[in-house]
Image: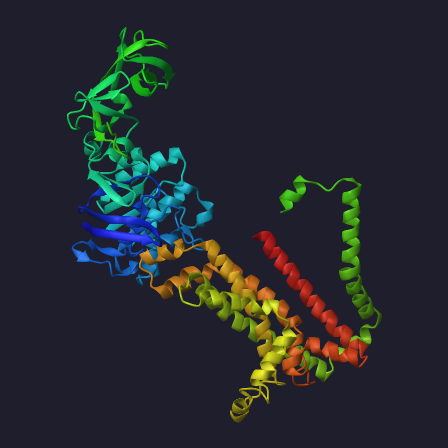
Length: 348
Length: 271
């Protein structure tokens, strides 16, 4: 089912949580809402589900406007961060709840609950109580429960936030797999970029109640639309400077900045793996520290004005020859972004 | 709590002194009177047994039992509904309601008895209207019930409200997204989760109903064979130096109280 959200605005008292959010999700897509905590991602999800009302704006599901409808009338499956399983019901009763409220008879409910539990890899655990399961198992019960009434849309609020790293990895793969089988239009919220890129077809970056950018993981990584997106995604260096002679001057390093005007303050954003360093006498930076990270090495180099650049190299890269503490190095930025500097503009 | 106390064991002469003082205090104030009651009972079991089957004594016991059962029924319904409204409701006047519900804990039941008399007594505001309808409240069993309902009002509501806060709304939200109507959510999700609070509130309500004296005395008038409850009968028996009745009823109430206290403690320990 397609989703269209138009001009959502919402405030809780004096705090504005959504500012004119519009987004579209195609039928069968798996989309991630990614952004820092408190940015409004969960609120968007809750507004789509009908658990919150936006102050203004429209929600369309499958071409039908639904923002006046109660959650129970929207046919949306919702998975909560802390599972929200019914604590006094068995696992099977939890899964069957959405069928019970529709008056489906007990026999059919049992069969469907069993089939769903098998599908999520929890066959045979239907008789357990929620508190007898691990976090990962509970989250799978929550998903099976949300899927039981065959929703046309599945919303997952930080679905793997409450389980440990290893289980999270497994659940991610499993969610992607499930989506590839069922093709239920799905949106999940996460503040973990790796999770968003690994699982979703498309990622929407939400910050401070706004949609910053929507695109495929490659688009988000290679063509960030805003300064925030370039900075938020990946392991980045952020350096502020002023444009002189057509280049951003950063303590001995000058980066061509045709997008900015002479004298304008600019911000360089460059990912650690997009920096190349090699030993060169009289180079603009000096190696400060080498940190072995297993398969990679992190090199911290100090610019003439004392600011640090952090670069990542594959272990045993030929570029690392002669790169040691105190060595002067040349710097090349293979991909970088320059934005007008945030905050007060620099005056000449 | 107990973990904290284990972590800092009581040691030294000062601690031993405090412990001794506490024991003495509890012994003098709680255990000694209970023991003397028990002793009085053991000394004269025959007269007490005879006193307990006297019609007026049986009537007072029966009235106490009926009042307690009715009160429990009322507070179960009102406690669940009131707690839900207090915690989940977004109605104007909620804060005032919240404060009003606690009032019976703070004011003396005797005073409230008088307040009710001024309202619904024969000379009271609604007295004439009520007697025209043939309803007698003051100095009638209905008065006893109203007095008991008043003093037990906050108990179940509070238990329910505290638990509801703790539970949060996520299960109810989950039910809504799964298509449950508000009633289905109430019956299948919210109320079953409140079982603990309803049981706890009921135990407190029973204890309070059995033991209430002031409001029941003022509103009911402690008329033998009509409005006298177990507690007011003990009071009358003491006035009339009828020791077997006073001792027998007291022992029965004490046994009930000890049972309730141990049930409450077991529940607290299990939680």
